[in-house]
Image (cartoon, helix red, strand yellow):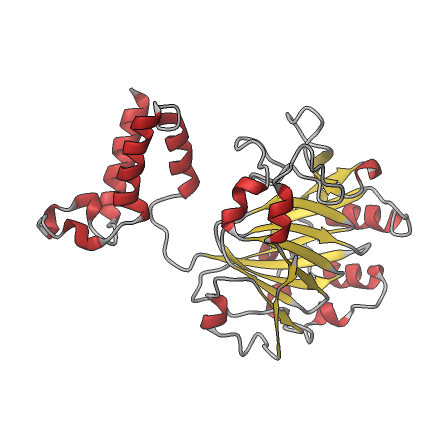
Length: 334
């Protein structure tokens, strides 16, 4: 397990496109240390909560409450047909009251607000904790809770994650570690994204022997208030929050425009229509996928007049995308 690369001296005003497009994770030490909320680090939780409540306009939030016996782990129930926490829509002040109620507990019940649009929840907050990612068309969300452990998962977009209050640890794995992380069901997961089934606090190496290889390939990023993490898309990350109050602000974006839908949709269709074919047929389709998708070269199709290339045109056109969608919908109905 290695430490992530750390860069000091980068601020929201000096953040470069080159850094944002990094293909490996980078910690920006002290990136937002002059923002108002990180300036409250070291103060009591109530002061930070009062600051946040100054922006709050009464919106209900989706909050999860986990039993203390799970030690902050947000996960499945034993049958893996539901979750080990109760979820509900409540006002933010009720969440803060619950956190304060257990702030001195050695092992408190987890209180967790997942990805929530910051501009809807806290109008005006983003302007005081601003990163100009307009060119990236980034979506800015906020995460609030006490001590928690979020199972390893990936996000399709790239992310600039800013620790605003409390402390967090990201354990990061490159995309090729998928087979060593023992991923759970694709249809059901605590946060909507498939997760590793391994409990990082007490890994069961008899049940998950390849996880040892994943750990050897992992890197660790530890964030204090004001630090930020540049996290490329598709990197797996396990996230721990350590303090009685932790606040994280994320910015998600895609480096390239995405007009054709989610790749996960294509994967699910391939599981349905390709995976259970005889091996020799799967190999033949693997060649097709490599030629048309994974090892695609636009010069493969120069023998076709450009106006007749249809979906083979690079980049794909919006009209071709619409034709594919109509065709797939019609075929799935049959």
